[in-house]
Amino acid sequence: VQLVESGGGLVQAGGSLRLSCAASGLTFGIFAMGWHRQAPGKERELVAHISSGGRTYYTDSVKGRFTISRDNAKNTVYLQMSSLKPDDTAVYYCAAGTYPLTTAPLVAYWGQGTQVTVSS
Image (cartoon, rainbow, N blue to C red; front, side, top):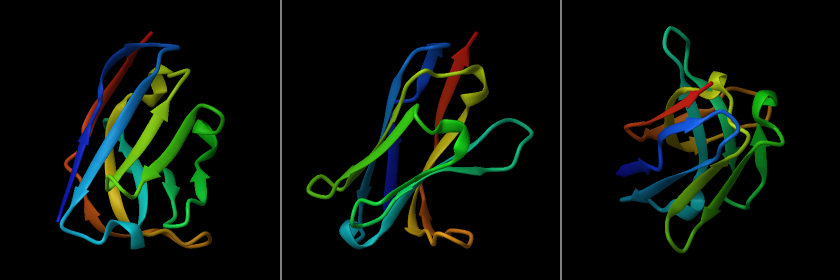
């Protein structure tokens, strides 16, 4: 199984980036997919996830600014990030697994991560 992220980079505050995660070696359509991030000195946190049926969840700090979507025909999940803030600076990881609404996610597979840096 491989999850390969792309689209990270350096952007000014207020700018936008679109992350992509291409999956292979798994039955993509049956997995919930998530984006997590880890800033220096902080724990990894869940940013957003999308169920196999397209139901979405966002952590409060990104609601209204980030949009997660998936294309099952392309085995790809996306994270459109707008109105970026310096606090969004982190390594962003794609993940496949189970994302219950009331308990912690159960991640089966992780990507290698892509760096997002937002300058002020």
